[in-house]
Image (cartoon, helix red, strand yellow):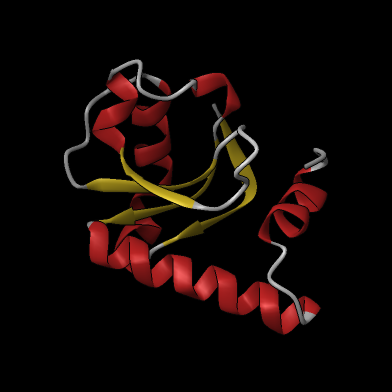
Length: 108
């Protein structure tokens, strides 16, 4: 599991960002924290998952790149919309994978 160097954070978590990340890395359950992730599979689309799923073997943690963190699903949806809108305004495209990974120095 890696954290995107330009991590997107919902407004409500801006002052708690470091605490949230620390707990994620320690696999501590945070009930209402939702993650916007770029999984390592071929799908290469952003996904929203509740952080409690990291406590289970549902996802391959090594392949997850956490792009954003939000409190609650509605804030995660809004943050995802903001990410896609920003990428489109910067590039004129919605190649999310290429945009994010070029800044993270990984390949799609």
